[in-house]
Image 1 (cartoon, rainbow, N blue to C red):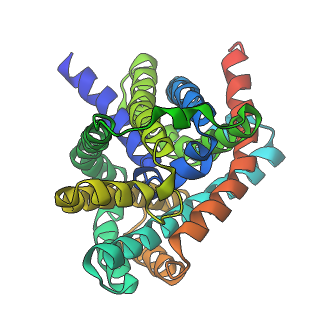
Image 2 (cartoon, rainbow, N blue to C red):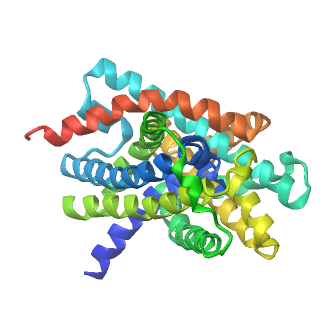
Amino acid sequence: MIKSMIHILSIALIYCGTVFGAGFASGQEIVSFFSSHFLWGVVLSVFVGFLFSFFGYAVCSKAKEFGLNSAKEYFDFLFPKAVSGLLHFICMAFLVVSFCIMIAGCGTLFKEQFSLRPMIGSLFSLVICYKIIKNRVGGLARFNAVITPFMFLGVVALCCVVLTRTDVDFSLLEQGRPQKAAFSGALYLSYNLVSAAAVLAPSAAIAKSKRQAGLGGALGGILVAVPLVLLSLVLTLFPAFHTEQLPFFALICAMHPKLKLACAGLLYGAMLTTAASSGVSVLARVKPKFTGKYAAVLCAAAFAASFVPFDVLVKTMYSAFGVCGLVLILGIVKSILRKQ
């Protein structure tokens, strides 16, 4: 029983850590896709959170049931060969971009928190990522087991601190248009599933049964949904911070300066978990039993890309890959309805 719970929790934490990246924890993604739509954005975040859990269950259970141990095998199961090949290429490209985005975010955080050059923060973070990535899925699971619970509890606690203030103006929730919010929510879900599916398919092997794998994916979706809804609500109520590169970080620092360091640590952990998940998934496709030199090459490439501003990467690249992710959602739904 205890081993079963450990397997379920391990998959859930990997899933949560993959989605829970810099754009998420900093609020940059939340503002772009949810909070800018006010009430409808908050409502949609609840629905998207449910879908994270639903699709998490679907991906993990199918991967375990049919022995799909890589992103390529999973996509081949969902689509014809031509479509699968294209989607797999897009997925790998997204993971590489995601890795670079996280490293760029680390550089931005070091600049704002410690007044250091972004290059220093990026280099320091790449050293940590290298140590994690070279140990493959095992290293990723151990890292997420330590960092992800801290991130989850930290974001939930900070959101509660903000929402308990007496000067919160809930009338701001009355604004927004449902049509634009729905499209933004669909993009957010789809581009996250692109990377999540690539990580969840091999991670499902941790479980000993289809049920364990499915429950791990479902629980991971819940762990994503709770902070997603809270962040959407908090940032909707404080639109003055929407223009910040790190909106949630800036909001917490403005309201409670003493929590600045804790918030920075939370954000940094979120960046590293997603960077590590993306890096492991990419290199596992290149060479299943990759060595440290492959991790070093990936880290060097990410360092070069980290000089692009963090907010530009999030708003441009994520939206572009989100359109491609919609195809993946259709494939997952088809696999659920398929009788095999």
